[in-house]
Length: 288
Image (cartoon, rainbow, N blue to C red):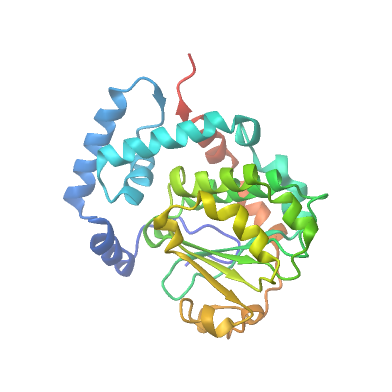
């Protein structure tokens, strides 16, 4: 296991291999065949610019259960998204958002995985988020950078990611920043162009005016994601039905200590992998 604030890039352990085989059809034979076929598909599509080393191909094959054509389609959707949102994510590097990462605790990652081995991303979009200091676009850019780092973890590729959206003290200032355009971009990315398995999204501590936020997001949510979104309000016992308290911090009535770290503690880890992020920035449609 990697120390806190480090990515775990080690190969899959036996338990994760079992999950990969059961949920993703991942056996040595299927992996080799998938890599071979996806490499060939990429070679025959000059419009796409992606590396074709085993590691990169597996990153796109895993969320598609090793169906090469589906993985190629995912690459195309990633390319579409990056082209459409070039003004927000084009050539995005960690240092571009160092201030937002280190001085404003809006996006955090739990140092431990949950009881199912999934990475847990924490997004503070309630009163602690000041949109005049960190815009909604910047919030998305932080999320995008974290996903570019997370794809380096084989265990995260297999077990997936859980997101906790904390709306504590949500006010009109935050609601005003969550425009339909912002919502559409986030949901388009999550549902179409993220090469990670998003397993669950938990909405916690949302006040009554959250209904206004939900009204903005709801039209863009497809059925598959809709089934993975859960609303808990202040009832942490409801959250605990999905996430075991033994792996949750005291902030969510879990048995672990309260969170005493922020995105600032994670920033050096993200920065450490800037070469990888620079490489991923080049993935997409080949420039003519």
